[in-house]
View 1: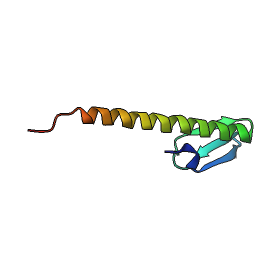
View 2: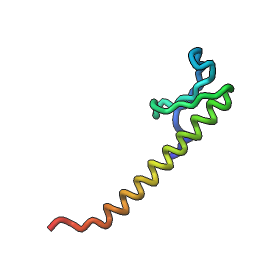
View 3: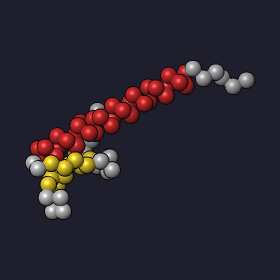
Amino acid sequence: MDHKRYTYRVVWSDEDKEFVGLCTEFPSLSWLHTTMEGALKGIVGIVADVVADMESAGEEIQRHVQNVPPPP
């Protein structure tokens, strides 16, 4: 999965007084920063980390599944 293919946006938060980086495909993730660029860079980075974790977890699951003996 390529983290650069997701939908990102940056909005201003009056409540936080900072820019908020968001990703449509990962609605529970956000990144606050004082600049628009920083908010975008932050959310892209955190999504990249999550995608990498998901990929490595998938590989780990595949290794375990390959070692499971077939049912009798």
